[in-house]
Image (cartoon, rainbow over all chains, first blue to last red):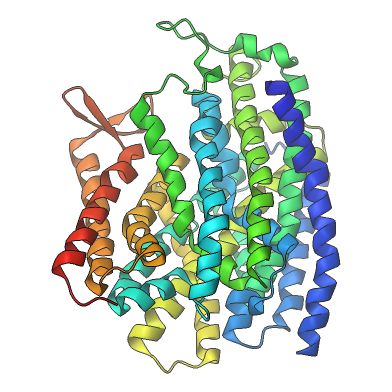
Length: 38
Length: 489
């Protein structure tokens, strides 16, 4: 059980956090573009 | 001698330089106080995930949770961390939509208090928020880190404060939130790399066999969900999670979100990340304990250094720099976010309404930027007062819960009378001061646990019980104020 939970945590912290960072990069462009038009 | 090589220092230096450049770039976009304090109310879901996860989980969790894991085991996750996720889910699903619907134009938690209870309650609430937000633990963590790296404390602290204060002062919440995303990835990825390497270093999963067996119960308490602790201690630990419902950073981000769904999604995704991070930090603490039992680490190892020691022992050059960068990132993301909030408490929540109602946007901007520096300095000095990180966290969380929890939740869910808020907040403040005064004056310093314990017959009162003892005082004062106090709002 401990092993399974640990590997799940590693997956979420590693690939999971990088995925959210990529999502952030995509969303950032939109935020600043909108900000420039206001 | 420093455990880091030149390459490790280059990695840490590059990270710090990057943060500074970010603040300078973002500062050009700040035009008004709302741009500065609430990032113009335009934060998107991924930005909110990154900023919430990294701000709320600073060095107190990284070093503090592993410290608790080192001493007590998995109970740190089950009874300290797990209850938080339920409170976070409640905040996401119930509180956030109400805040967005009912408090348009609000920027801080004291704004909510003032709308229901008037300016006096706003000020008392702002004092509670300030004590909670001052980044005391993060400063203590940076000092531990500097000591560990062999950097003189004073210089290390001055450099960290200087860089944090520079980019936060320049860019406000925008710089804070965007730097948080970098810090978020750094702290998560470094922990994700460290976990499997640490398990391998300690000899694989069989390491659990080397954890100590309790002489009375004949069980390995590190592997029990309750850790062999008494039920009151577990309740006290769980109850600190209630602070999430009145978390100043949570309120600021709710008001800074571009819409309600963004903040809700961010909090729910955040739970997965928080739970994983907590588990990783707890496990590294347990691994440190097993390593001590195996003779891999010295027996005198202090709990707050458990995670750092394990990482420095088993990580290769380069990865050590990444890990130190990750821990530094965790501390800095907390320092910048909470210094901004604490400075806002003083300038926006107290100075503006009490001393200068007509303060211009520019004046608020200048004073808040200046306040960021001062808060960081004050927090560094206050961090010297606490021996254990968990004590500092308990103190700050208890002040916050005792002062604002009852009035804010009653305002959000009910229609209390105006006086109730002031009575509840002031009662909580008096209660928490009395609790700590009694604990320090009548209690004894416990050498094993490194904290004050007040013994009355068979009953033991620890600093961990602060919330349990003071929340009822605030509630009683609130009820009295409601029935005996002034008009209904």
